[in-house]
Image (cartoon, rainbow, N blue to C red; front, side, top):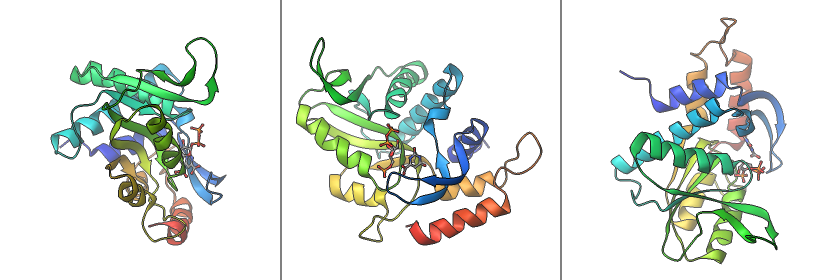
Length: 231
Ligand SMILES: O=P(O)(O)OC[C@H]1O[C@H](OP(=O)(O)OP(=O)(O)O)[C@H](O)[C@@H]1O
Ligand SMILES: O=C(O)c1cc(=O)[nH]c(=O)[nH]1
């Protein structure tokens, strides 16, 4: 039987050194013992593979009836969402013969040339837009980008696909940020892997030195963090 998607993805994260262990300050201000750095997918092979993971997840959710198959464009929020949107649309084309656009935003409006705040497939009323992003912690990035999209056109956001759901509580409830975003905006959120799957798989995966990527010390630090912030 082929390995589960989340196990293969965990291996890819670890081999690419996109999953780091140490002490990291998050956008939310939380101090985390692990960090997913999508900037580590820094060559053609890695970004192509990443796009294939997204395309596989998208096709799976479509096949399961949880995601609309009519996707006009894949939208990735700047900055780290940009290569995600591009590589996902390439992988959907190459793997599944599905031609979809890609679009991303500028963090600052451009007043000359093509101008505006969006790049790529132009957003138009009624378009089906699939969001992609790397991780969700508190959901701030999504809450910022949805109104930005809606300010350009009355698009239909059909879902969000993440690399990793960090499974963290929102500040003011016990809901996870993913659940809160689903309730708030009414679209489904999918993740190629969640943090608990990653730590379970990581204990069974070994680096070139023969040691497990997730040592007991790392696992305890992650458990302690999730006991405080996990949903
Ligand atoms: O769920 P949240 O609490 O919003 O945290 C996750 C977001 O934070 C990071 O982006 P960031 O805004 O740092 O921008 P970047 O893509 O330019 O690194 C990350 O890429 C996610 O988009
Ligand atoms: O919450 C964040 O800021 C964050 C967490 C993470 O694992 N990776 C990332 O790029 N940002």
